[in-house]
Amino acid sequence: MTGNFYSVACPDCENEQIVFGKAASEVACEVCGHTLARPTGGKAAIEGEVLETVEAR
Image (tube, rainbow, N blue to C red):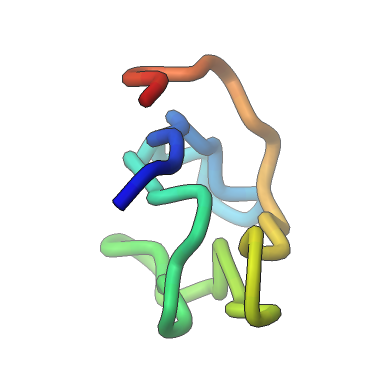
């Protein structure tokens, strides 16, 4: 399994969370519940601001 992990800032509450770049299910913010990533069949559609690549594979 190859893909990158990203640090993403929630647009609603500014919480930083780690998200897999090829997420197979919706990823919600742990603080406010806003959707941070939606699956698209390949790379996930990330809805927050990508701050950095945490781990590149």
